Amino acid sequence: MSSKAQTREKDYERGIRIADRRKAIGLSQDELAHRVGIGRQALSAIENGGDFKIQTLDNLAIVLGVSVVCWTSTPTVC
Image: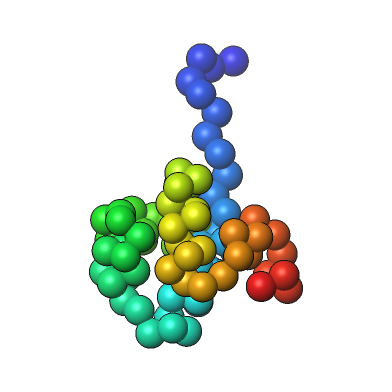
């Protein structure tokens, strides 16, 4: 067995929900990234299923006007 750390599976559904909400409120990736306090490339990675810090999760929820539960539960919760 390799000594490398295991990689986490990407959460594509979460990324799609974030991107869909961003588009629904009319923000570009640049605009949302600036409001959240991250780079556009970081936001792109998140929208493509990548991981992020809990603070980023909180900031995304605030800026997008949704509950943090939207990113951690089934889409019907939002």
